Image (cartoon, rainbow, N blue to C red):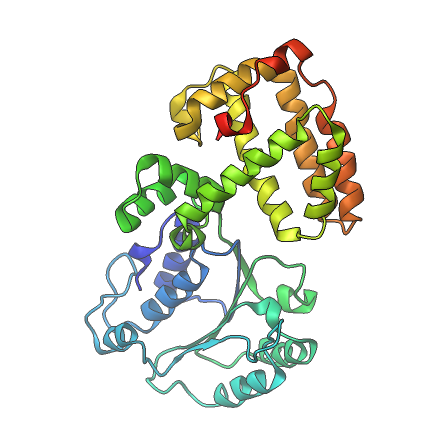
Length: 348
């Protein structure tokens, strides 16, 4: 893995290249950012560059020396990846793993360069492991670099965060994810744009996505919207009762519904096809936008966002869904307009 293979993280790479050129590498790094944006790949590229015997002028690894060959083979003796152990629902990085790390870092690196140890994800450390790691961070051994990867700081001890150099990894631009999906998965432009939008700038999630399953989820979301917007309140309340028991389905509905209404708002603001995510549903979007109008589209987007915030704060899910339904149905189109509304099958 090389710096030149990392996409969309130029600021982070610039920091590393400067540190390598100056010989001033921190002893501990904390990589923060969402899943699938290149944190683990960057850690591997940094380890390879640190140990390269003939670095390029841009501070990237050469790819030819003995050290680079060991990295390419996946068996460099001074690169460690510590991950959660166990088959439990919430596997953990345990104190025994950190004790072994402390024991090994008491010795010089085997190959004479840098030993790089990656803890992924750092949030998986239990309390005992985290406290044991603090001792290493307080007295860092020479030529040993610790890299912790995490989605955020909240689940880490503040004393660990304060002893690491923080580097934030951004979500990748949609254009980068779309390009990679086309090149590596053979997706059409329309499919790549939809998958990229749902993946939220995570190339890892996008590459692992099942496009057919995503289309099925979108059809279910549109069917749900038709229930919420129906003339009778009863089916909508029944929908809430069912969804309240299926948290993952609610999360998926919220994500896809917000993307759908985002497209409606783009059209309401005179946006054009290149700015639309659901390009294969452009005709249905245009028809629905003309019936709803910008004020109602904005109101419903706000209702979706409010529900998402509430569900993150541990509220009663069914009550939150019922309140959402009430807000959703306010200001619905007139009966005359509803008479011309296409059915759920037409929207799909």
